Image (tube, rainbow, N blue to C red; front, side):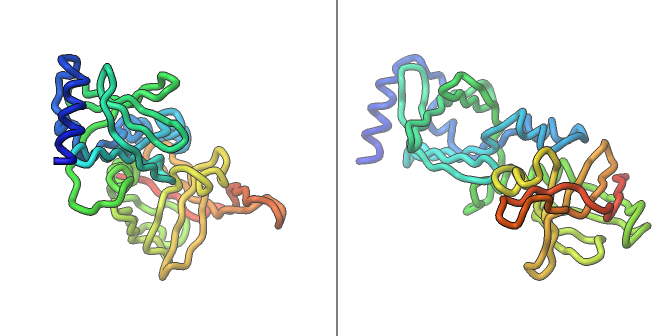
Length: 241
């Protein structure tokens, strides 16, 4: 009853303004526009910067909870009704207005910036941000990549949507740097992490259409400074069939 009452009051506040039931908002929503922009084959950092900062929402109206991921950090907030639609409120006074437009979720920030999201099917207990990451990996790195230059030349490399990689001599796991410290250390460069047995290193990469070039990462910062990674020696050139 304690949960039902706030939702009933919220419905009264909304009156006839909202055309969707609260449960229509429930679920996981990902930023498909950012994935489409990335999959054009250019800079991942640019695509994410231009279509961010939020990449995934999780909405639970039964518990009036809203969470989002920016690819590096997660934020948990509370859902409430306002005069127009629904509002997600977070620590520090941040708010996002949420509304449905057909099958899409629109989130409007306090500055008026608008982002759109599409709902995805999600298995239970999937970590926040994992659905966007999985969809991005499928689109951006999915398929068969032939090694044109570097160790394993002539072989086929496959990046899975769960973060495993086969065909590269050495590493068996990877992660794209999407945001936060991981991405900022590379400056304007795209970077990824390659590892085996929980030991790994960052690499710089450049994707040009269906060609992916991976470089060793060179730290140009002083010992007491935040690392700044630049491309060093070329490690691999891959081409997607």
